[in-house]
Every structure is written in structure tokens, then in C-alpha cells.
Image (cartoon, rainbow, N blue to C red):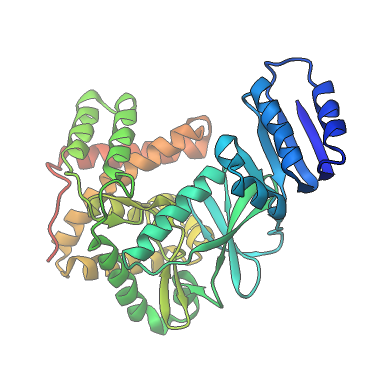
Length: 383
């Protein structure tokens, strides 16, 4: 049952308001939602109505609360007694430039100074809170990032607004300034080393290894028995690592603002072994576009050949070697986890039901099976 409240509720109309509210309630087991979108003020007399209502309807929820009313509810402890949702500013991204896309949302520039990350999940408030918390953790630990300062409604979902003054992604720089290729490699690899060199206090970030084990166990039903078991054992053998990884590290998630390089799209932040990061990088720069090179342009904003050249240059810088055999060895380890993740993702998104999806899954599965036959560990050392 949704009940709308509007105007003011104080001692002059509290009794009338209470009678109206309880008059609408016929089933004590039915959850009650108080919509305060049109409510400008509530006094202690109005708050006592809500307390009496909570006694008969413990699952009461309050939505659409304006800032001034929310402050009253927060100050008096109501936000701790029941779910209270603020009213959010509405933002449109129609015609806005897309500057980044990840597994959980898409980032748009809404004006010269600000961007908004629109979440795929229509009920994204919990996701937004998680990303804010992990971004603060990263900033405290010395990783430069943008912090969200506002939550907004965007269509049927929510968005998180960040200030990025005239910032440009590394994809944009690579595409428009080819003479800065080496600079981009140095900065991109340097940030990667900085992330992976950051020790995270226990419990502050999720463990990416546990997620990867889940991917491998899912794949058991889609691989030959021996290959499936080997995949699980290889990923389980990756040790716990308390160093930070980004989890979705590519050229649209690194921004140049003035002379400062900022890491964005932090919801995938975790702890884990670097091979888990390199796997997601392989997917972004190569894996998703292996059979359709045009996907690189639509996803990263750079063509496939430039994407490959950049990724291998970054890998060389990161590992501290130009030895093609060493580079190939580490790349193949990353591909094992990368293919595992892509196959699982495609199957869960009904990939087996389309011709194009089946072609990708068949290709990735063959590559994964061949790699598993020739790999004894996913661990590696940097030069």
C-alpha cells in the first residue's frame, strides 16, 4: 500500500492526517510505503504518527524524501529505524558523449565539468554506496580517483555524478594524438604498477580470486571433464593476495585531467593476484573483439590494431621485458582466466541461443582447452 503525504504535517493537522492514513489500511500484513515527494515539512507530531504506524506495519518504508525533510528524519534517528530513500535530482543523458562502459554501468559526460555513471541495475543504490566506499578506500591509500558528490535518477535507474574538469580518456588521447603513444604506455603501465603495489587493509575490498573460482566452477559443465577440473585447480592454486587490482583496467577508465592522471569506474576494485587484472585487460583489449574487430572501436574508441599494439607495449613495460617468449607465457596465463570469464558471461546472456554467440563461445572454448593442456600454473614473475 502506497500512501502519499504532501504539504506540511504538524500539530494543526496531525490528527486528521493520522485518521486518513489508518483509514486507508485494511490489511496489517501489507507492506506500507509512505511517499513524501510532495511533503515540505514534518514536525514531531507527524513523526509520532510514523512511529505508531510502524508498530502495526513493521515493514514500513519511506520514499521520495526531499532534502529538508530527510535531514529531520536523519537527525531524529528515523533513517536507522526504517528504510528511507531520498528524492533524487533527475538527469538526462540523451545526446551525451559516452566516455566509458563497464560490466555494471556506462559513464557519460553531462557537461564540461561533470560526468555521470549510469548503473545497469535499476535498483542501484546499494551498488552506488559500494563504489563510493571503495573509491574512498583507494583515495586514502594514494590512488588518484574522482569521488562521487551526488546521486541522481537517470531514466529507470540511478547514476553517480563525478567532477572531471575537461578530462580526456586515454582512448581519446591514443585516437587523436598518435605521437603520445609512448607517453600513454608509460603512464598507463605506471598506474598499473602503482595499483598493484598498494596493500589493502583486510576486509576493505572483495577478493577477486573467490570470484574467479566461481567462474571456473561454472565452466565445469561446458568443458571436457579433465579440462574443467584442471581449470578449477589452476585458479584455486592462485594464492590470496592483499594487493589492490582495479578489475576493469582499460583506456576508457584512465583519465587525464590537466596534468593529473585519474583512475575511474571503481566498482570492480578488489584485492588479488595481478594475473586476474591482466585477464580482464586481455578481454578489454583483445578477447571481446577477436572475431569481430569492430567491437574494439565501439567499446574502447580505438581500432583493433592500435589496441593490440598498446596492450603488448603496456605488458612489456609492466613485466620489465621485451622477451617475446616471456610476454607470450604471461599472456597465455591471462587468456585462460579471460576466456573463462567471457564464456561464462556469454552463456549467462543467452549466447548459446544465437549464431554469433555460439561462434564466439566455440572459439573461446577451443582456445581455452588448448591453453589448459599446456599450462601448469597461472603464476608469473615480473622482471
